[in-house]
Structures are given as C-alpha cells and as structure tokens.
Image 1 (cartoon, helix red, strand yellow):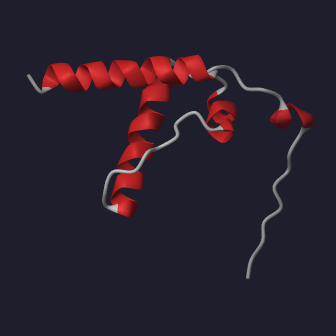
Image 2 (tube, rainbow, N blue to C red; image 1 turned 120 degrees about the vertical axis):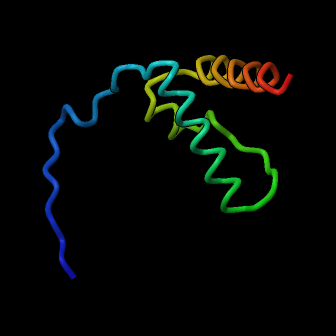
Image 3 (cartoon, rainbow, N blue to C red; image 1 turned 60 degrees about the vertical axis):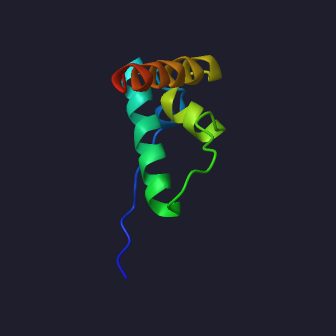
Length: 79
C-alpha cells in the first residue's frame, strides 16, 4: 500500500469564500442525481447539511433560494 503525505497550512482551515449561485445549483443537481442513481427511488435529500454549507461557504437561505430557482425552472420547462 502506498501513502502520500499531504501538507496543510493554517490557511487551509480558514472559512472559504462563498460559492456562487451556479456552484450551489450544480452541487444540488449532482447530489440529487447520484443519490437517485444509488437508491433508485425518491428519498428526501438534505441539501443544507453542515458539511455542504461549510464546503460551499454559504448559509441555509442560499441553499433554499437555489432549490426554489431549480424547482421553478423545472416547472416552467415542463410546460
């Protein structure tokens, strides 16, 4: 087995700059797609987990706003 040392600095643990709305939507779409693929049916998906919020550098309101935009766009595209 081969291990490679990863060097980290104190800056690596600082909060990152907030993700853009497009980056948030991409994460939501990818999580929904892969969870659907893995489980094969519709299950509730939590997009505002602490890990996702920290990764994206955003708050719950940003996730919910982007979920609303994706839902609205899906409704309009199906008409």
